[in-house]
Image (tube, rainbow over all chains, first blue to last red; front, side):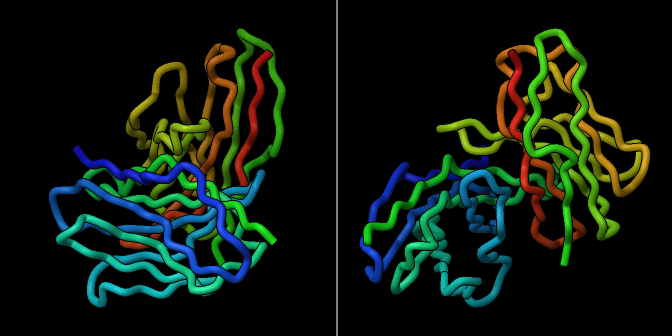
Length: 114
Length: 111
């Protein structure tokens, strides 16, 4: 069955430090993968997507992610974190034979220290 | 820019009430979705719709129903609200081969 795992429930980084959020997926075919961000009390905003092609994808707010098929991973990175990046981050894979529904990981909450 | 609007940000209801959550999108998207979000469980799909009057059960449909009479509107219905339905509800829409766009969510409390 398809699944997404985010191993880290909560991460704290210092402002200006680099960030990597981990995501592992289980999917039989070529996955279409996403990272979303959710600020407190808000809906989900799309950060970036991987459909095919270049395995390093750029997103908004300075984020990037790398698709590694051999490791079934799609980790999110940012070279220098800002206090405003504190939020919850969700990795997701789309299941196209079920209307394009998304299967989400459990989420990683990011805290940023001054 | 795609806009998905959920009618209420916060809602408080009593057990046994029939509750309606409304969602409207302005981009003529074919597909619409209702998720619930609970701490530690991420988002789980309740129902989705791929066309007017068409609906499919998601992973946790029990206790819910949906209605899609017009393309832009997708309603989630709690037939008889229970306390275990207290949650954050998120609506989303998409068109073919594009990502889902989400509303701001409705935080529903059932007392």
